[in-house]
Image (cartoon, rainbow, N blue to C red; front, top):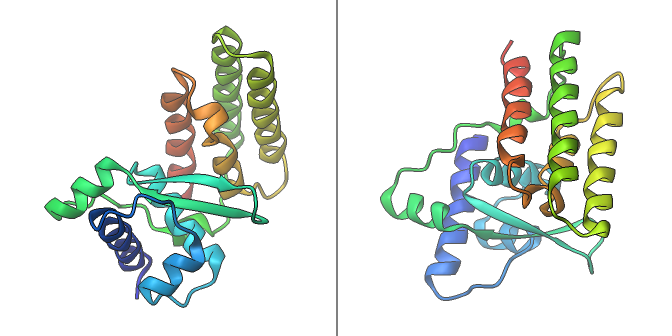
Length: 186
């Protein structure tokens, strides 16, 4: 099976859960058990990251589990399954590769991260939330400077609910996604 087909299987399973009245979030082991996917957890996590980037799935951190994540279908994902129009075009195999970003692309990402800092500083957030958001951006900045940046980890940091809920951040994150995807396709 391809990553695209596996994404569809996961999305259809999450749709079936919600359609049957189960509104609880589910774990990767639950997804594996009920979909028949025998792939490693990291592969399923990458697939769900792509679904989340497309707005079809939401995730939450499961703090009681080491590295655990919880998943649920969004309204957009539910509608997409019902209409058969599932717009998932990102293939997780792209995200697992190594990207050679030019210095210009890295500087553009640095500029976007600087803009994100300005948006967060201007937002009316609590001191704790501001500090947490700034720490996440600082972590992303440090990871970008490594010789072989871990793009899935950088994107997870930037999609954190601490940052993602701030008005004006989503467009900036999409700018970074576009740069990374352009590098992946070159």
